[in-house]
Image (cartoon, rainbow, N blue to C red):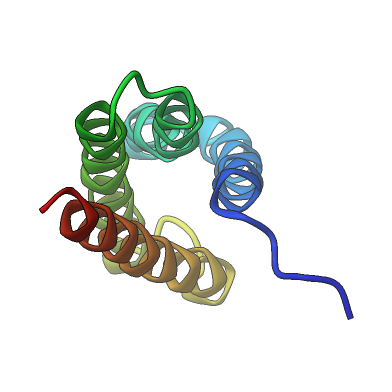
Length: 120
């Protein structure tokens, strides 16, 4: 069995899944389309910030980019929860994405804490 995907690959795959969901939402009039725009921004921003963090100019820059990614992951979780609560998309379709958003939040928070500890 291979090693688990690293955070850059995992957030990239998450963004792909968010984009596919947003394509479905875009086909709906009204709120679905509006929420799609919010979700696609935050859901793809997580990986973009993780990617940027890899070239951080300093440890503080690295942490700063990951903190932005964490903020975006929390926002994405919010939009996903809202989609479930409003029943715009069946909960069964969103459960795997919600679970992954939770895991990404925990992983990013852990990396931030560990990196900050190393700074001290």
